[in-house]
Image (cartoon, helix red, strand yellow):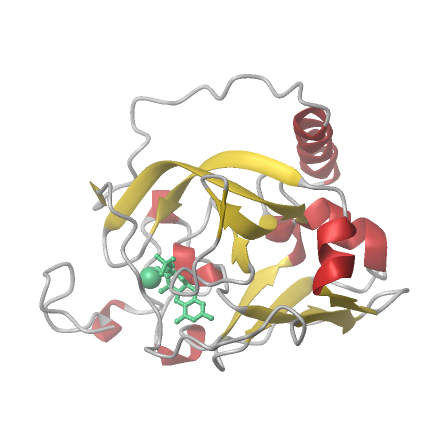
Length: 226
Ligand SMILES: Nc1nc2c(c(=O)[nH]1)N[C@H]1C(S)=C(S)[C@@H](COP(=O)(O)O)O[C@H]1N2
Ligand SMILES: [Mo]
């Protein structure tokens, strides 16, 4: 685990220095059961909160040495990070080569300094959404709080002012309209996780649902409702 963390931090540092190695894409880049799209669909609870930048705050706390509440100006003053990643939605669409710019999760962790007992992270959003991840999943070189997509500010429908991007998990693990990040000494389930979705959400293992009995009717067809 420690070696994986050091390796991820080295990859992130290289990216920050503009010296990232070209991404080697495997032939099986599309996870099982996914299809490729090119239109960046919108998925949310149907509420797209209006958060003016002068009212926007990102509260980061819990099991940390240095809790902070960032204004938009504070957030934008942090070291900026651009990365290209693939995006996998549990409803079976994937999109390749998404360019997001924002603040790396490593930068957030360096700022707040998680305490040794911090093992999980809970994310809360302006639309009432929430999701949870283990800390080691967040401490990967490609995890960030993004404010821009393809060089333009994130639209409200895609989670602006800022959203979480965790490329190696199904996209529901990345909260749009992010409002609060809490480091925890235990795991608590988020919005979809309490509704039968997988807690681990690894697209390569097809971890869609916690239990196959929870698969919604028509899953994978255009008629399914999530
Ligand atoms: N705040 C919030 N974040 C969210 C969601 C949501 O409903 N609310 N939906 C999740 C799901 S299921 C997916 S697939 C992605 C969709 O992001 P997109 O609408 O930009 O494609 O956001 C995730 N993050
Ligand atoms: Mo999703």
